[in-house]
Length: 261
Image 1 (cartoon, one colour):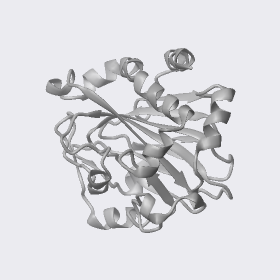
Image 2 (tube, one colour):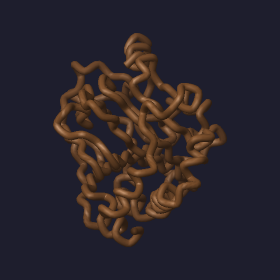
Image 3 (cartoon, one colour):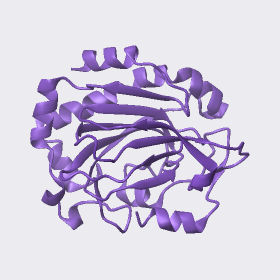
Image 4 (cartoon, helix red, strand yellow):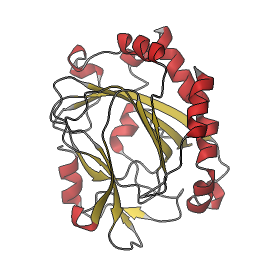
C-alpha cells in the first residue's frame, strides 16, 4: 500500500494557484478502500458524548485521537494500517512542498520537528463552511475522503484574495475573495495544502442523503498544546510565529457566525 501511495504523491502536480496544494485521486487501492469503508462508523452510530462538535449546527462530528472511539478504531487492522501509512508519507509530502516551505516559513522554524496528527470526521446534509484559515500550527493539512456522494454540493473551494494584505484575516469577508478552485469531491479523493496565511478555503453546502466521511491529516509544528487534543482543538490557535506573513481575527461577528455553521 505505502509504495503505491508514495508513487502517486511523487507523480502529482504541485498547484500554486491560489495557494500550494496537491490533488490525488484514487488515493488508495480499491481493495484497501473497500476494507476501510467496512469499519468506518456512520454519523448516526456516534453519540454526542463520543465526538467533538466545532459548531452549534452539529452537522459534523469529529472523532479526535484522544477519544475512546478513535482508540477502538485503531484496533481494526485496516484503520491502523491506513493511519500508519498517513504517518509514513510525511517525509515525501514535506519534500513535495519544500520550495514553498522555504519561501513562507520563518527561518527558525524551517528545520524544526514536524508532528503527524489525524482525526476522523463525518458530515451530514446541511453542512457548510465559510472561507477561513486553519490553525496556524498546521504546516501542511490534508483531507482524505474514503466515501462521498458526488454532484450534491459539499465542494472544496479555494479562494484568492482580491487585494494585497499586510495582515491576513482568519475569517475574511467574501467581498475580498474570489473562488479560484472549486473541487467536486468523490470517494477516494485526497488533497494536501500548505497552510500559508492566505490559504483560504471553504465547503459549499452539502446536500447528500448519506454521510460524507473524511480523514483530517495534519503535519504540525511541535507545540506543548497539540491540536491532537480535543480541548486544544476547540480553542483554536491564531498565534503566528511560524509564518512570515501575519494573521489575526479582524471581525468577531464573522468568527461567531463561522461557529454556528
